[in-house]
Length: 251
Image (cartoon, rainbow, N blue to C red):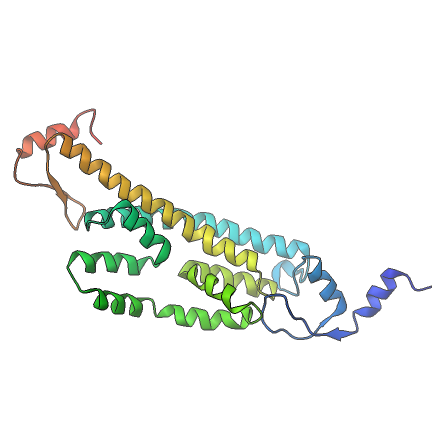
């Protein structure tokens, strides 16, 4: 008698194409592999010597999570600095936040803020920041074979969240599994950079406003130099500036 288990074993010799899984075009797999993917298990990979296993999938995702935690700290730090720079350039809280959400370009945002502060015309700002982000064309070309089955609209949304860190984590994750895992992509793209970058931008711009208002309440004008030093503006004496800043109520 042929049991279901025997039928599944014999079916492994029948090769069928993999399609509709949101990943790259892959070599033909057995019907058992199709069954595994339909149940949410990864396809053939190379992680921990356990290709296509739930353990391999879990370990690969764990690697992504650990990397995301480390990158979050870095992205958060840079986001705070961007918020400070944006406020110094005259951006409001809403303007800085919208820029981080809509543009979401890291180094290009820093450059754009500097260009705006220097009074550069908008067409020139757009062109220079586009050139700075041209590397994303290469990232997209490298990811396309993995995402060829994903609908174009969904790929366009994924492209907005693509960063250097997200690209590196996603490609490594895909290579370990042997197919494109969209959950891993979103974890790397949103968890590692998008959320910490935008939260930190708010902290930076609001923090800059708080410090400015704190000094303004004491009739102390100041400016922040490029090297981070605080420079008093004409008005109150520098000695009073130092006494207030060193006081117990200082920021």
